Amino acid sequence: MSCNSECGSCGVAGCGQRKEDNSFAVPLAEGSTVKKVIGVVSGKGGVGKSLITGLLASRFAKTHKTAILDADITGPSIPKMFGITERAAGSEKGLIPVETATGIKLMSINLLLESPEMPVIWRGPVIAGVVKQFWGEVLWGDVDYMFVDMPPGTGDVPLTVFQSLPISGIIVVASPQELVSMIVGKAVGMANMMNIPILGIVENMSYVECPDCGKKIYLYGESHVEEAAKEYGLDLLGSVPVDPLIAKCCDNGELEKMEDRWLDAAAAKIIAT
Image 1 (cartoon, rainbow, N blue to C red):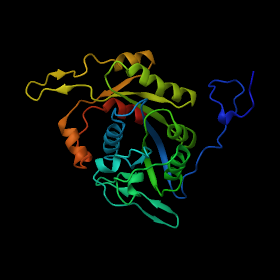
Image 2: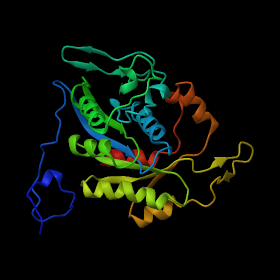
Image 3: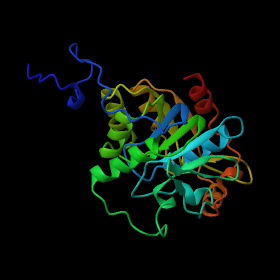
């Protein structure tokens, strides 16, 4: 009824009059190719998106050319997890990503700041512009799988990523609390409105495993993630425990040394996408 034919600014999914609009798409730097782009998202912060991003990238780096685009501009943690302290360099052609010990290519705002403790106090449009630059002005080279670590929520950056990058699919990260249905619903709702494929849900901080008997202890009580997955018709692709060794590896910048035993289904789904 009130259509103004400006499909790029419309949030109505499934409109019969919608026209494909690629005006927001950002091309890669010359000489770069990325075969699959996987977003790691959540409707709230503190659920472990960066951890899941790092674990998946570390797994894929063993057999594929892998990269991480850290789109969490105001709260970047990826370089710390991988022990990267050097700053990214540049040339007349663009920025050069920093590589981890196993060859994962990284780009994060912390690789450009004078100190990783410096706060980024920018408004949304500026932050969104930086994310576009990380995609289009970084010399990524040949990449099989790029994982995009998103900030929480459904604001400027997720919108920019969904409109500007060729997202192959997203992984939704959640924690076991009862609020999970609402939190997952926000991420799922945005992805559906933007016609972005949702690969499934990964539960983080799922349980603690007793070091003596191996019994799983559910710190938050009964998990509600599987209920949320069923509610939205999604697959539960893994449950990652609360493990002091994971925290130690992240704090020491040695996440690549962590042997992932929890994300087999997520990895298989990404490969099949």
